[in-house]
Figure: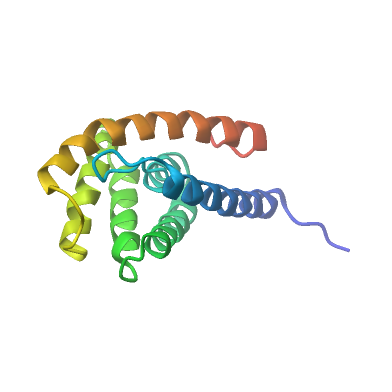
Length: 158
């Protein structure tokens, strides 16, 4: 019987970790309180953190899966969030300056949703204004949690 290589086990462990985190993050995102129609994003910051830390196939899979999860939970058109998540993850992965992109990602996502959906409740300017601190806080929290989970699971690349 041939044993799997370490790389295959590591990739499988990452996929399982991604699936678990996406399930819990999606549930928490839907259950979190909304401030003027703006909830706390968890799927988008997780995608951006994975894009900053992991290699190409894993961050692309994470972006597509997180976007599809967001689309399903929020009753958005298919690929509305997935395309934004994939574009934002690619931008973060190949950018030299990532921290401003972390802060701008959630307000840009709210604008993107307005273009795709058009019928979002509330004032768009107010939602984007609230989206800056809420998105930045979510990224800071998710970055700490993702680092802790990756270290505990033994799959941290850093």
